[in-house]
Length: 290
Ligand code: BG6
Image (cartoon, rainbow, N blue to C red; front, side, top):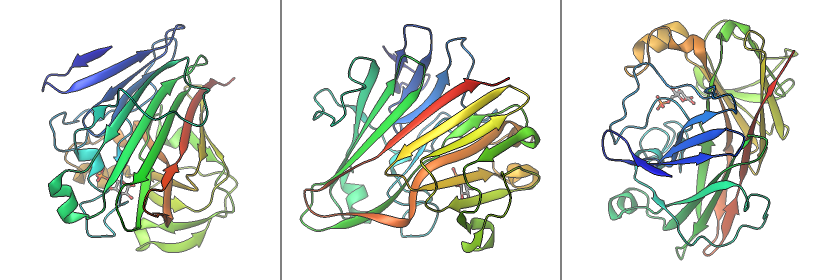
């Protein structure tokens, strides 16, 4: 199902037979909503979100590409999240056919001439978004070099999870990992704790994490599993109160109800030779916990 938002931008809605749903905007190829079969929203959207392009909506899953953060020549987090994508009616088949029978859509992003002036590398970025029977949300990015010289990129699925209260959540799967701390100029540290909990701003890139990271939300009795392939790093971000106030499109108290946990490839950029394609995979599952 395709609908238009208030600004005339197409959004695709996928529905799963048991009631789960996902809504994706063609602006940025950004997932804006993911609901479980009880209709509960699982992704955070800012109370001050701006739905007008070119800025990406603060919430859902903006895609950071081809640059993460402000290290590089491009705008913060690259341009893919700020551009219009389109539906790809005839995508090349995916290697794994597991998602073919479920609710899914294929999107395509190609850089404009303006983009190519800033970043002179021809590419096609395909994104399959699928909702499977159990209600898991699967994103399969495919990036192909259609140029005659190699290029390198970073990527992150900047996933804003909806949580009850930031003080009540815990992230498991990053213990003992090295991380780059964005609050200390990307200095490298080693995670010492058993699980990551929050009592101030956190802005880190955990390096080469395990394939599954879990976010436990005690109050909501909910566990998110973030399963990933080809995305070695995990970004964990919560702005906390001071930074939240400084971000124009984030409500002052919103930081309590969001946690960004991104499957990403940042520390070691991915290099594609001419004609080569990279495929990643991100699977988000939510479980009820007791
Ligand atoms: C994080 C960055 O991943 O994304 C932060 O490390 C940044 O520094 C945040 O503030 C949000 O970025 P943006 O561009 O969407 O405000």
